[in-house]
Image 1 (cartoon, one colour):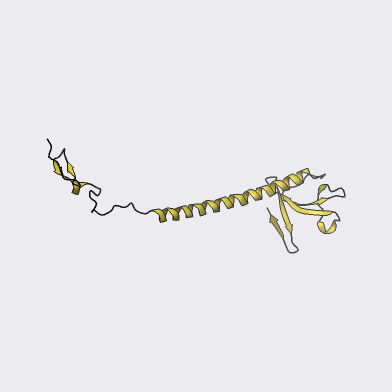
Image 2 (cartoon, helix red, strand yellow; image 1 turned 90 degrees about the horizontal axis):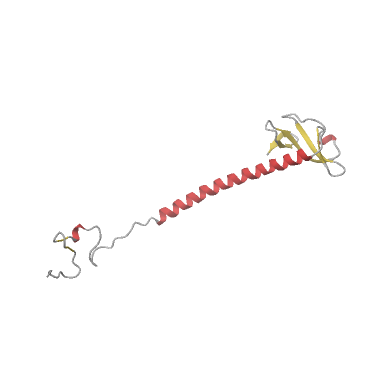
Length: 143
């Protein structure tokens, strides 16, 4: 019959020795408590940084999408408008509404035209129409 060992004693029956000192964990109530390192603050910091980075990318993509939608609207508006000439790449054209509120494209400047002015546009080399803002001092492109 095996000799009874006292409770709270770590004894390895196979090796026939007490092995509490060799174990990687506490073996008695009086041993110091083993705690896992607190990675919570590091995780929270990394989550915050990742979310901030992803939100910035999302905002950039959303802004690019909105710009593309504007270009699409301009292109649909101009291609559905009336004009009797072949627009040249790089030239500025002006969009108006006629008396029946139908859009038409013209080379006539807004200063000398009495129709409702909708905007000025330039045909790009990609065959996309970009909106041009007419300022008194300069002409600026607005996508």
